[in-house]
Length: 490
Image (cartoon, rainbow, N blue to C red; front, side, top):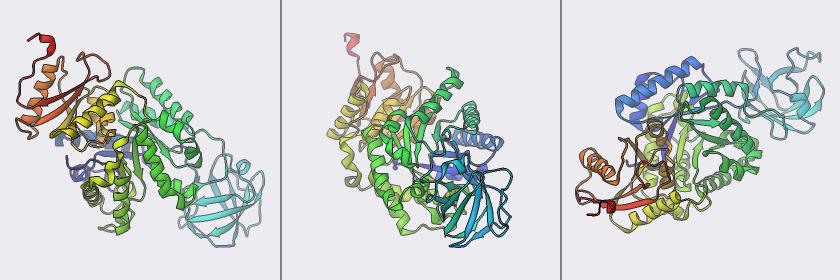
């Protein structure tokens, strides 16, 4: 594997047929994102089936990420061509089903925003359509709010709404999210992303729902917290501690907070996630111009490269692959930029001191020792035997300069590993001894992966082999040489 940072691509109308998904996987898609803000369960079920089938045909595991909508605030139904809002114009917003009785000269915009009238105050900003339209609240009543248009434009139905200064008091984990999550668990998704996370309690609510639904009957997916609200920044340490990973969701983050803060926040979030040995994804508008054009801007190329230099585990495409004209080309372009950025190890190698704030454990110490051993000797790869994927994650977070090959006998774990930085995953039979592990390694490396006798690898596992315990064993092994366990007495 030449590329370490993983690529997440969103499926949608432009990329849901089998031919396109296959081409996307061949171009470099590691993770397929299903956005549950759009589409029906039937559509997502077909996409999941197609992904799994293509993954099997290509012999490449494609991780499936379910992105829950969360409490998305939207404009209601407007005329087909939308409504033009002009700077300085006074308009009314209402969340009531029955439109209020106000002068006919005032435009009334229905809002799908719970508790709107009781949550905003005079002087608050109302942002719509990803912040392209800005209003300021001038008057609040029980049935509507009066706003002045600051930045105008054409407003269409179902556009997103942001209220940076308001606290709506609504649950982050909605009933729609719960129904979508149950669907995702029934269809075996590998990762769940939660939108509009405010506190660690939001993550606990999702994990509790997963535990309740699975009850030992299914493999719990990883839970990713999308960081896109000011409250999430204030509670970032607690959220990172509770979640399996975080996503730098720069779209809403750049609307809810000052755009000028986003680059610094991106670096801080990535740094903290790595310090805590948690997955981190950088998302939103990475190749926005490729929705309509076959080539990106130079600024977009620099943006992707800088995310690599910052230490992100994965980069994500949204509309570029879901609705754009060039979904396959966008993935191919992103892969090329990532690979080129990664050739300059000096730029991202400064993460050699990470992670240092993760829970201290045998696994962390052993993976760190394996990294140092691999860098000290002419080692070709680090081999990780893992059942849950945790050891592979810790090895990934140590950022070795050699490939990480994760071997697992658990299919559900295999499917999750596609999100881990630098990890190539392989399904292998269960090993019951060090000798049987090495036999599996030799057969895989020498027989299928192009390694040669005499080359060295570092092997990480737990002893006794087969016990469900953290790794406590690190072995420097030369391929082709016979290994005899000390327990054999020979």
